[in-house]
Every structure is written in C-alpha cells, then in structure tokens.
Length: 183
Image (cartoon, rainbow, N blue to C red; front, side):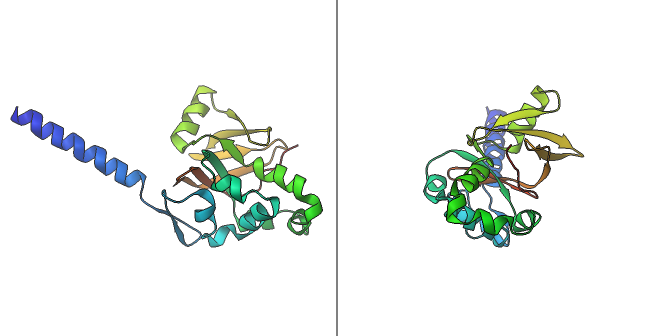
C-alpha cells in the first residue's frame, strides 16, 4: 500500500506539472500570451502582429475571433506582411477591398483547436504531408522540414512556423514568417 501511495503521489505530481507547463505563458512580440485570454486579446499585445491586428479590424473579424471558436490561427508577423509587394497591405486595408482581405485572413484560420502534436500526427498519417481546410474554404498543406512545421499555400508559397502552441481561451496561435495566399 505504501508503494501505491508513493506511485500515486508521483503520478499526480507529473500530471499537475505537465498541466502547469502546458499553460505557462509564451512570449510573442515582447508580450506574454495567456491561455485565459482570447485570440484578439493576446494578439493586440504583440508588437510583432500590429499589421495583422489592423487587418483583422479592417476586415471586421474582431468579434468572430473573440468568440468561442475554437480556432487555430496561423499568424503572420509584421515582417511577413512587409515581404508582400509594395503597397499590397495598404491596398488590402481599403474598405473597397474588404472581401479580398477577409478571404486572405480567413485562409489563415482552421476550425478547431490544433496544436503541434495534432499537426504532426496528421502529417505522419498523411505520410509526410497533411492537407487542412481553412475557414475560407481553401486548402493549406503542412509538413516537417528539418524538424520545423512548414505550411504551403495554394500558390505554392512556403511559410515556417516560428512559434507554436500559443494556447488561447478560444484556440491556438502559430506564428508564421510568411503571409499565406489562397488561389
């Protein structure tokens, strides 16, 4: 019985430690991201995602991404948006381009709460590549390259996940280094 109590206490400690570690805040863009906050609340605090936040506001998607979800968001950094051809972001933020902007942004969102383990399991199941359907209705493909999760958009462009498993109250964020583009 004594051994059982010690084993049980050890198991409880491991489980609690794992839970605490999984919920520890991750720093993105100089700000801590908290699992108790929603996608918008956390993204607004990241210095690396000011362009994304401005785009989400211009597209009228704030309320949606504050909602219950769950959503998995592949969040391009400011640097990723800066890699687009000159004038692209400014043009997309114009009211007359709201539907195009909405399509691009929702192409970065997958329904459900996916973490890197789930993505890697799906990649393994797909023998090296997993096809995911976005909220926009298009497809993105995910794969591993040199141990990093990579995404390929419908135009063949590749993005690298630079920060994974940023847990939110309504989903998960993966920081990426390129803007994904639908057809």
